[in-house]
Image (cartoon, rainbow, N blue to C red):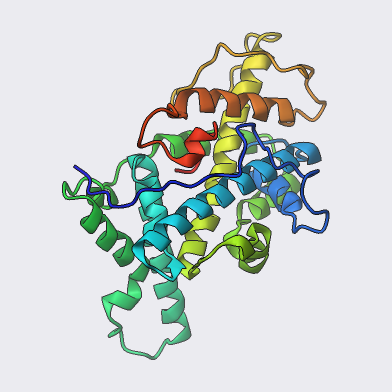
Length: 322
């Protein structure tokens, strides 16, 4: 049984539509990640030149979700009496999805390993006597919180498992198929796109989120986690949208099944979006994303009548990253 002392009761400003705060509703001068998102989407399986309007919609969805998550994490931090939003507040929001918690723990493990490696390279002649608390601070913070929150030890054991993640495996197999037909220039561009992330543009990412309205601000580790979750949200949007795109293509070409849907369970008997004509580039269209999000919400949105339902669930849109 989980020990839960947080009660997140926030009035979310987010509407239930796919991206209620569209780019038209926001300041024109707001920091934009559209160029980077187009490269990320290409690296995740979209066409080589993703549509600008599609990337703009993805940006709106990711921004909307992260801002809502930040507000809930802020509520949790204030209830704890903390002056900052920390990893614990985000982990608490993710506690219901064990697979996503496991992915986050592996990410934190990787970040600690990378920090340790970089420090070793910088201080080559320094003896290896740095404490484990500095070498694995992210992982230790997460594990300490999970020990406190979960008496069963079930969540903590996720970090020790070495199972194949079916979502990640499916994604890698799809990308491997995608790269088979690439020439040298295309593959070089693909590899460069694969290296893009929100974490590598930390200052721009912080400006993009616009933390001015929060009573408490996220610390550096929380920002690392948020940048990771932002990328994971983009990846899941692309995954789901490609499945919708494949289904729509199959209606005109029944043998064009190139992506397996075995790892994603969601409704497939939905409305056909208005723009059913494929773009010459084969790129994901906004209608594919809207339909994918609609299906995801149908399966994952919790009933608003449940006491445990968060404000974001009550708004009609489920988190993609947690």
